Image: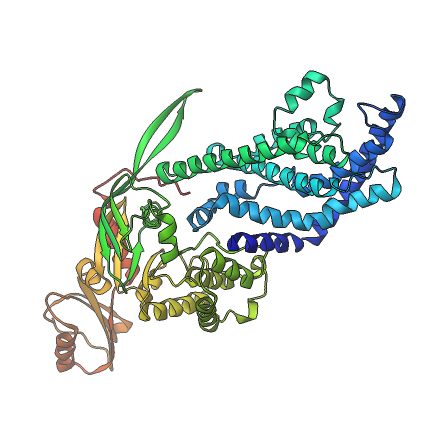
Length: 259
Length: 329
């Protein structure tokens, strides 16, 4: 436990050394937020004010929350482990007396902690100050949103861990990463809210972990439903278990077959 | 400390044959290697690239499972009890870092303390000692990515020692370092060994061995070619030594017992006398020379360690023709 607490702090400190990168990321999030908000609210207006129970304020809130959560859960751009596998540095990680999966999760929680200040809050504050915004009505929504955001983080980490682990077999997981970058935005409710899709597609999507990454915390914040939390909890656990098993196979592959 | 018996490691290497077919070929990286290392020893493990050094080290640290044979390190089977073993031995991979790239060196040490669960007073004491001996103080607060290679290596060695391992395994610790950094590191490792830590190091730099390791193991094509004290190996493979004498005035030397070759320089002022260890000693030869001529200066030249190793490689390279192509992790 002690180790993980220290790793969380280390993760926070590691990312806090890259201030310019954070600033650039934040600016990008805000600029793309403006673009997305313009397109989506235009659509909502032409549809006489609401689409799938998203009115103008809810749409703005959806966009700015999404822009903030994007950097918090780190949907794209985590290649640390894949690089270490490719270069062979992963030997050092495998050799340590620790659990690689939970250790990296702890570091990621630290990173996300820094991202709260630099990536999550700024776009939301920006949107809330300058555009119509839908704040939660029940006070209980706030703690539930925190839980939901954390579950989104763990779920996202679970997916990233698996994608990175694929490097043990593929040697180069860049193709897989590109595929993920293209599809994830569409499937997790980043491009448009999942509720905009036809009924059958929504059912199909909620059977996958994708909505847990972004749509679920937004649903909780907008007080649309709380089912999302159960969905997230299920996938967070399922992905961590899958990651654990795949890591074991990967280690076996390295140790027995020799990489 | 280390007990290795008939150790063998094979790799299956795939090569493409046509569009879909693949052919697998078994390559033997380590073949029938046996040795013991006692507590407190310092052993050098040398061999050309692809000889099987790193593969052996990986099996000793539990990162690879042997295909055959047994390994015991500190009484445990490394592959089965990798994590228990990790707490008791230290490993430095010269070309891999175990430090956190973006954090100050000091932070990496603190993280390793909690990962290895070392109590804080022991950790503090050891860190202080390393900071002192390796002169880490000026860059303890510098992020690792900004350290020079020499500074980083000193950090790596410290990182491997903070949990007080009884055995330190170093895989090419001096690779890429300048002469001064090498010397400083060797001096530190020599001191560490004197204070009781067992050392096993692989290297291409034979000065490392000369300086640190009374015992040398030479491996090539996955088998141990030689194992013993450096001095003995030298006598065995290079049975000849050279006595260089400078005379006061040019003279031709009379035939001397035990001398197999005489090479003269500077018009007879300097003579290189090659003699066999088995037939005469340097002292006897010098006495004999002095009886005949007036000597200005003399020196006994030992064969270079590179020479010893080169001859060891040459001795068996004719025996095998398949070069094992070791897949490095």
